[in-house]
Image 1 (tube, rainbow, N blue to C red):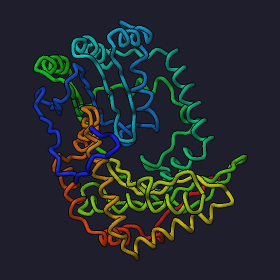
Image 2 (cartoon, rainbow, N blue to C red):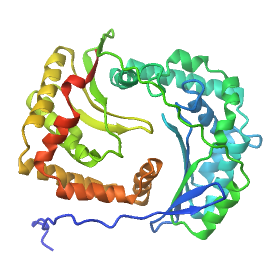
Image 3 (cartoon, rainbow, N blue to C red):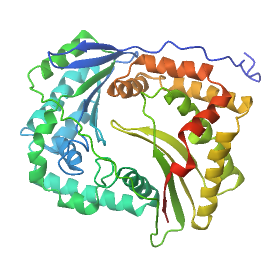
Length: 417
């Protein structure tokens, strides 16, 4: 092999995507199975639909599920952590706006022991007061640190502007709210732990693992998820917030956007990628490379369970804020009015094809991609539609998507400086 000669580039063909099996675990529970990989490793995930729409007070779900690791009637928090370490396992508990994800990584041979421990935590947590006080102090300090950072505060405040401070997606958990939450409130919300979950398992999955999971879950009487009641969106006006000691300005601008079920979703994703979705985007070339106003700028379409929104985010010097906003608007308008060249368009779609294949480069990557679809009621057909759109879309349709969905006059803007 002559390593001085680069291998020939080949067009990416329509891939064969990994497929999952959805089987009935118990009379009330299904499980999504992705049997993939050569290593004797299992990723088991419970997605529990308890988020901002279901919690009685903002941030309560965070405390409830984080307390799972703090002790049961049989084990202390140290013993729980030591047991997972002893078996070479790892547990992640991640509360989000829409649900709580509990991920358990384990070797197949130790899966029975760590799965039993996980179920003990779900059904026999005792919520020790001393551990809650420590968790509450840590959480309060985390929020203080987030609010002190303009970029983090701006993202949270921007969502509040888009939805309103009384909307589940708009309510911010302040340090005062985090500190005021009582252990009694957390314990009173305890029944939410046994909300009917959506289950996923990936790796070297055999009948033995499924039998173990079935045995652990069949004796639990799960409650149905609380439905997400429709909540009015009270969108705020654009704002500029001054913070003492700041040298940079955090810019957030955007609007409510289309969801994954919308017929334009794949074309809009491609158009957004060209505008600001990757390092070679229009916004990066202008705002970073040509004007030198920022280290980075990015646009994205974010999908929540009950809403979607599109936004641009960047950090610039305070004195360059107005110039950056003007250039952002110019780039949106220019892409709306002028069809990108075939060279630029093909570069973006080829990049996105490679990125698409990268989302299936390991069993755990495939797990996350397929999980996100399942939670939105979609299947692998959605992914094939996306790839086919990358193949068939025309450059002129980029401008059509920007013109149709991104009118700068409809943007909400937040500057934190």
